[in-house]
Figure 1 (cartoon, rainbow, N blue to C red):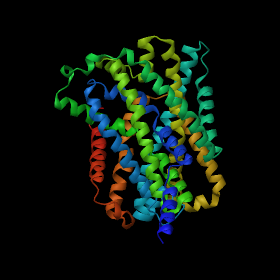
Figure 2 (figure 1 turned 90 degrees about the horizontal axis):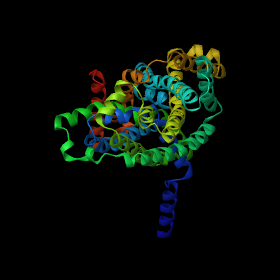
Figure 3 (figure 1 turned 60 degrees about the vertical axis):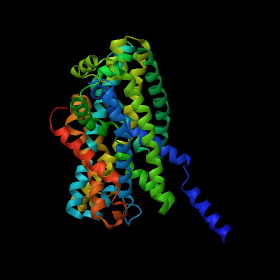
Figure 4 (figure 1 turned 180 degrees about the horizontal axis):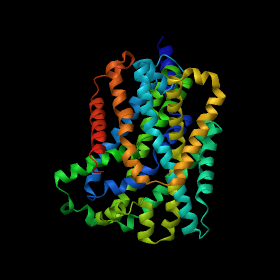
Length: 424
């Protein structure tokens, strides 16, 4: 009997061990999160110098892990094995509320997809003209080709997307480390001096105003639904444990690599320089390239931006398409049925291609779109909606009472209220 118990215990442990496929998903979560946000995070976080970063670093790890864990558990709380986040919302909250929340879910992600179309076009255009000394390609042609290339990988399937993300994330991690270490000799030890510590009020205000950018920069919620469904398909009842492991490791990766980069940038630049970068509406890598006038940064800076945007686009496109499909299927089911699933999917792809291409061509302010359209919707869906479900949905009741729930609610409310102040 004891041998049988040991065997069953070992089988359970093996089922919940961290596999290579789990690592691939963790890397996919990492790649989804590391996008345009990281290019602006050091500017927002470092305006008052080094010391606010300590508090920011202490907050962002738990923020990221607990919020995404709750969202994955929400997806896995459905009675249906194939239910994505939009189906789960309708199952738990009813048709009308489900439609509203599904729309918010779509609107939390769709602007980010648009942002990436403009950002990658600007990055490649600048690189061709300034670093390679090449001709300026007509914007309509360059933007169309880049958007088609990014979407083409997605159209070819989820497996290819995971492979492409994994291939992109490895060099992205290495280059982020390389850039961070390269800046070490330029660190100003004076910035770490206790005499440079801001007042408590100024410190808390910096952290408060940085929370929305943290939400945006570390957000990988668009890929959580697909990840959770894949775990349920693979592991059944052990899906929650595997999702938790994947998200925990993704959060550790993000905390380590992203905050190392942020610390390195802030210590290499003065608050005055960061304020200048904010005034010029430049991402941190562009400002560094101009400030240091170094070929290493001039070439690696655009490469980091390209890899970050390209890898992050996959997860956000997946989530936005899932959200829009949910909205249309719930509001006009007959029209979708008449179209057929294949034609409906083609129409969705065409909508995303044309809209992302249009915004990439028009080239609105990337930072402005992040500030006005990003964090409030993300915080509502990622931080507050799962916490509401824990209180109201019987299948989620087992997660009630945790201190982490209070922490996530507070962070979500702060993120939304901070964006509404207009100071950011």
